[in-house]
Length: 265
Image (tube, rainbow, N blue to C red; front, side):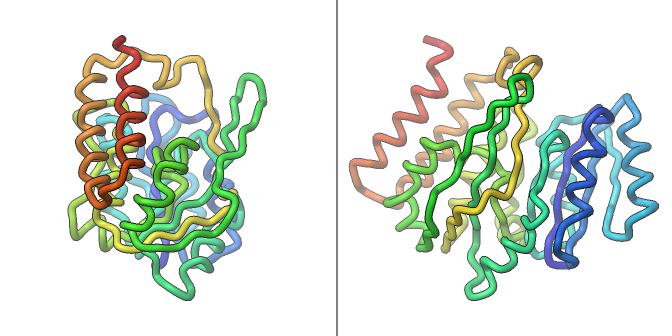
């Protein structure tokens, strides 16, 4: 199996069909879809089972509710693919996503491939393009020195779903999403993974549709342990930036600190 697509699911019956239909209609054959039902109380699990009965490459796992980090970790542990992709249950994967990722590593097996995405506000229908408009390749040291700050400022670093990752690296270094915090576990995982990479490829292709619902979203909710989660991300970023002794790293470092902590000022 070449690719595993991991989808954490919690009470997603209203949009789950749309998400899965995009996944099963990829223009690529060698992949599996791992649907993790994180203790849903609606019909999400039944919907997942229906897809599993119809498609051999769909795997369904039901677990007690533990949060999105816990669900993604469960997906990692049950994935069979050489490469890992993440998709949220209210988002869409472009039809050519896997084939583009596969083609991008045909000449050199990069440890991570970072692509672009569309940020869409569901209530207003407004869309924002998030991508780096040219191909870039290099070592992790070169990436942190030359490009990390640019991608960070353009929100291309934070999420796990616009990136192709190697399961061998995830397993070797036991990289997992935090189950302690309910916010910013995404960027923590990405920073941990980058800290274990040697080679990076950035491509301009738009491969993901990120659908944001402002009402009830994580960013509008109060999180009791938010301050601790932010500090945890800060420590991980500092670990990544130690590779380069240049002034730009401090700029990015402080940008993260004040961006994350400004809610407390």
